[in-house]
Structure formats: structure tokens, C-alpha cells
Image (cartoon, rainbow, N blue to C red; front, side):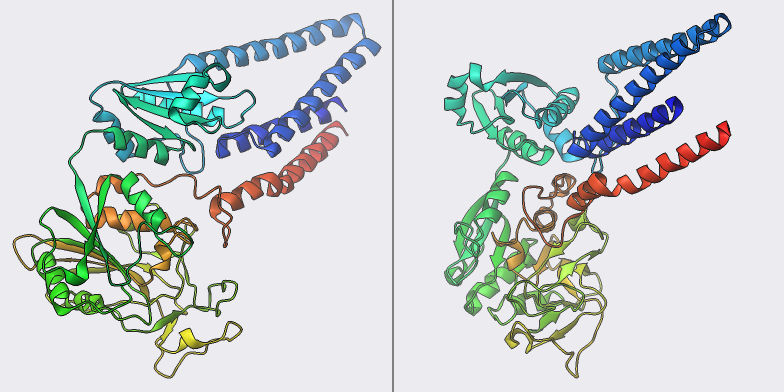
Amino acid sequence: MTGSLALVGLILMAFGWASQQVLGAQTPFALGQWLAGAGALTAAGLSALIRAGRHSQPGLRGPMLRTLARGAGACLVAAALYALSTQSETRLDMTLEKQFSLAEATLQALGKLPEPMTLTLYTLPGDPRLRRTGLLLDALARHGEVVVRTRDLNQYPEDEDRFGIGSSNSVVAELGEDWALVQRPSEGSLYEAIAGLLPRGERILYTAVGAGEGDLAQEGGDGFSGLGAALRNAGYTVRPLPLAVADAIPEDASGLLVIAPRRSLPDAALAAVERYLDGGGALVAFLEPGETSGIEAVLSRYGLESPDRFVVDPSSHPLEGETAGLSPVVSAYATHPATHGLGPNRMTFFRRARAFELRKTRPDDRLQAVALTSPDAWTDPQAGALPPDALPEPPDDANPGYHALVALAEVERGASPARIAAFGDADVASNRYLRALYNLDLVLNTVHWALEREPAIALHPKHGGRQVNQFPVPLERSLRSFYGAGLLVPELLLIVGGLVWLRQRSA
């Protein structure tokens, strides 16, 4: 009985520790394992003492005392190792997405601090998120001139009013007289705050307006204010450009953003975009099936052709009220800076998209499809008119296979090369879907690449939209469910196997 309880206790404690280390947080599953394991080990110890008292013989006292001494010694060694580890600067990051291993972009931002930065964590007793945030702040302090403070909100009400702190586990970053509030601390949000406080040259991203384009100021599901906020947080100065009446792109433009114009742009505007690209500019364009603005012809001139056909991917689940197959979920990506951090388990979501066909217009052009449908997809010009309960069938001219939903081009028509990024769907960046799955990662990565800011791509968000209910379920939430229930199966198998082994050994 004693050996069985000890074995069960050790297995429970081991599974609780492993779950906590992998997820980087104290979950109910891990806490339950710790408590149950501690109870089993305590019961095993009491059982051993009771048995020793019942069968006490002078000849057994020596072995019993030696066993107890070894156990006490092991506990002392474990306590000493723990004490040493708390004093050591060495850290092991065993979380799934390396949440406490700083990205290159973060390290670069810390290296550019002109003076020490203060990061103040505001707390309330009992907040379970504080340990995770404290570890992250400690990691920042180890790699840069950062002073970390912790303050109880109850003791600093003046700070709560000054910074507009709304809840515990908020961080205020201060650099000189400037400051920034981070309400949901993660490496990504802290990087944005640090980068926003650094002195830097202005990167101006002009966004087309006036022809029914997506509005970076519009809130609501159909607006793009979330993208506008993300771009500003990433260090861009976003300015509107009435492209429909423009005859040139401003010389201070770092890039041009065009989000699915609903009306045709005049020839003069399209010629201005082409002159800008021929001069080495950067263009990020979002298209929509069923819409023709003239940007499609500009993209085709550089080899990114996009026939006006709807992508149908039968392997993707339909949205509510949407025809099956018209909402492709992408899990196939090319190796490229724009897809950094994305893969089969980090999917992106598109709604009613068109595809790109890549055809070089010059031998030195570099074209690449970076986000692809499943190999069962096809395109159909009439699919958008199907009712929600319809099951699309491939037309006679269908060509099932991988279709590019995002395509990139590097072309050189003048003194310097131009970079072009094209999305076959604008909904991927809308407020309704920008934070679904890993859409935000793909969109921001692509903008960074087009504007030649590859170092910023290395910092991808490490929390995967934890606060958003998503479908399909993202990897991280699936793993949390797995660790909360799925680990019970191998754990029980291990316990049963151990008990059988003990029984056979004592037989």
C-alpha cells in the first residue's frame, strides 16, 4: 500500500509540474495534480510510519532510520537546488511558443534605448496572471536597460488616475517624460509600447481613400480601424491619400496601401501607382472578387494576375450563412519572411477570396505565392451567387489544385527594386476577422516585408488570440484542452502499469 501511494503521488506531481512548465501557467489541471500528488505522498509517509510502529524490531530500526535519513537528505538537496535556481540568472523556457524567449525585434528595441526605461507592473492580490507577466518583465530587464517595479493599485490610486489603469496586471512603460500603458501584457504588446517610445525616423504609409476603399478609421465589423491601430502600433504613420484624384504618390511615402476600391480608379491614378512602383516603391493591395478598380491591371503588369473568380475550397468549413467552400482556411504556406511563424497548426482565414496566377513579365522578376488553399480547391466565377445551403460543383473549366490567396513580387523597373504584396481578400484584414486565427500575423508580416522591415517580422504574437473565440479552434486552445483532459489517459495508463509492476515484484 505504501509503495503504491508513493508511486501514484510521484506520477501525479510529475504530470502537474510538466503541464505547468509547458503551458507557462498554473492551470486547474496542474493545480489538481499537485494537490492530489501531495496528498498521496503524505498518505504514503503516514502509512510507512504506522507500519514501522506496528512491526518495530530492534533489527529494523537501523534500516528504517537510514531510509528516513535518505529521504530527509533528498528533501534538503531539493530545497538547496531550488534556492540556488532562484538566485541563478539562468532561465529555461519550456513553454510551447517560447513565450519568455525574446524575439530579435524586441532585443533590437531594447538595444536602442537612449536611457533606462522603467516598467511598472500594477497588481491586485490574488491575480493569477502576475507570475507570467513578472517573468516576462524580468526577461526584458536581463537584456536591456530596464528597471522593473511592482506596485499595488490599492496603494497608488494617483497612478491609476494618471495612467488610466483599468485593471490589475497592467504595465506602464516610462522613458523620460513619455509613457505608454499596456493593458494586456505580452511580448508583442510590450514591444509595441517600447518601440512607440523610441525616437525614430517617420515611416509614412499612405492609404488610398475616396473610391470606396476600406476605411482605417471605420469601426464595426466591416471597418478596418483594427488594422489602422495595428499599423500605428507597429511604428507607421498612416496618412490618407485620395488616390482617385492623385497624379503622383508623395515622395515621402514609405509605402502605399490600397484596400479593395469599390469604384474604378481613373487612368491617371493608376499611372501614378505604376510610376511609383517603377521608381522602387512599395504597394500592399487587397482585392475582392466581383470588384474591378484597375488595381488588378496594375498587379497584372508586374506578373500578379487575378482573374475575377471565387475560390472554392471544399476542405474548409462554411461560415454561418455562407456557402460551403467560399471561406477557405489556409494552412499551407511558402517559406518566406511574410509567413514567419505560420504553419500547418497556425492557420489564417479568408472570406470570399480570389486567387492569383503568377507569370513573370521579365526574367529577373521574383514572384512567389505565400498563402495557398488546399489541393482540392478550384475557382468559379459564379460561385458567389450560390445560396448558403448549396454545395458548389467544379465548373467545366475548373483546375483543382493549390491556389495562391496571397502573392508577392520583387521587380526592378528603374534604379531600385519595388516590392508588391497582394491579397485576394480584404475581409482577412477587417475588424471582424483580423484577429481570427493568425490573420493579424500574416497581414502585419506582409506589410513589414513590403516596406523592408524584416526585423519587425521576427516578433510574432505569442498568445494566438487567447481572448477571442475562434473557429477552427487554434492550436494553443486545443493544447490547453489536451493538457486539461487528454493527459489523464496516459497518466492513468502509467499509474496502472506501475501498480502492476509493484504487485508482480512483491509476489
